[in-house]
Image (cartoon, rainbow, N blue to C red; front, side, top):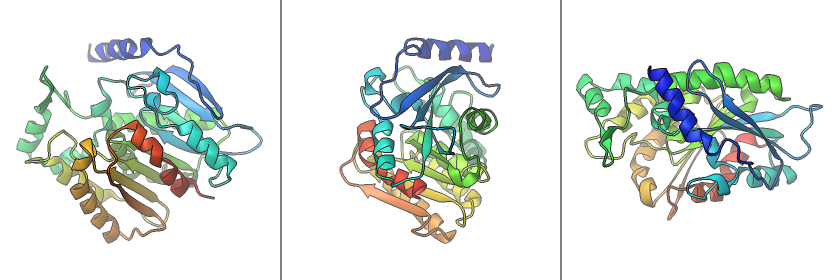
Length: 307
């Protein structure tokens, strides 16, 4: 019954925008509608191919969360986008990054938070804190934010064991770790961090913009950030062959992040990460929006994909 309800909810969320054409200023989009999975609900997957894409050469792959927010603001609820096609097209024309395709994995709305919440971080919480977290509510309807608990381990299984093999078979890609990257913002920043820690043999780099360290929407008496940081400390992959990018603004929701990011930075230093394989940037005055991430997306892309 739970799977059936999830499926129906996903179809309801996506039905209004499945058929809409994605307009891009550079390259082209190939949409795989209702991509099936045995681990999570079906969802759209948009694959951006650069101008001149050819099966005669190989391409790196950048996986990105919240796929419906990446390319075309006219189809989005808030009329904002990351401008991924503009940024990638510009950098490729300028030969500042290696040849690359982008795989935009849609979120499924209602279950976005539990798919992006690093699941194994719960192991670092006391039983009382875990119970309080699962009972945490937000909004007038007082729905539990984490519902029955995170399902991010299944979301990553979908990415690694279902979507990744499909992309490597359907497109002309390099399938090695040093050409496979993952990126997202807010909760998408958390799941990107979690992905490279859980599957260091798959992902060579992660870009985590406006990483939502609180996990919920409060900072006082909140044990979640410490749990995330403890997980990071115990599971960081080797600095020898992995790259990390973190950033944060100082306005709206981003104003909560700096103290936790500074703690994450200390962990990165203690594990041997340096400028060549790790960047953290602060953007004064920038808020928690796609418009803000669009302005600085070029920075992590060049860091991860430089030739």
